Length: 247
Image 1 (cartoon, rainbow, N blue to C red):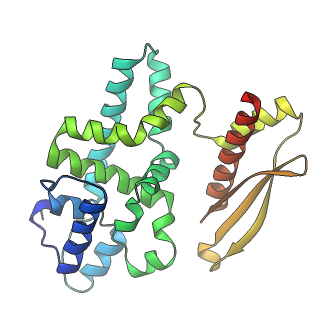
Image 2: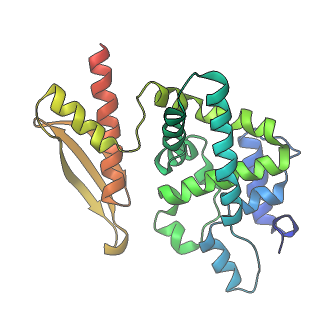
Image 3: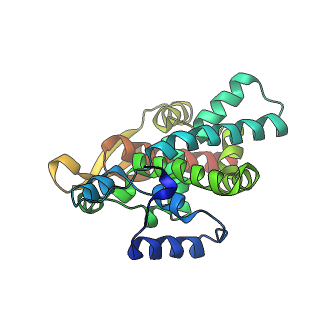
């Protein structure tokens, strides 16, 4: 079934109309593609079990990944005298799961993702993998509806601050490694990570983790895995320590 031949229910269409209004998207956008771009596989499977056939956002995600790469690549090529290696590194960082998930939360995309009841109940709207995938498929739906130029402006409006940080060397794929480099240089010690709280079922716990340097908390991160929570805590600590150095 083609994505733009899918029929929405009244509830789904109402949610999409609300999204268009709240995110100031053009009325001319293809609502059906926008809907499909937000359909997680858990929602699709749930509907299939009830006899309804719709598509997930996986194919749009594939397209969106390529569109995003082109937008970032063209922007870097046209505006900065960077080497091929530096441009590749910046593009990979800005297009990483961590950054795309953060950007998705910033524009409230998580509010509009269609999830199965189980996935929604277990915090799917906060999962970085779901958020970053939805961001890519969202970009694809805009590209197919409104063309490359509009999509480029839309994406750069969201991601430009991350691109600038990456160029300045203030954005990283691995914040734990970066924090370790900073603390060894400044304090001659390694950071420690401490679980402050964990809740939820054993297969889907939600963690709150603090990063500690010389008995002082420098950042707190939360997420549905220790890895994500530690990275977010390290990111906050890096930002705090870098700011202190500048002052």
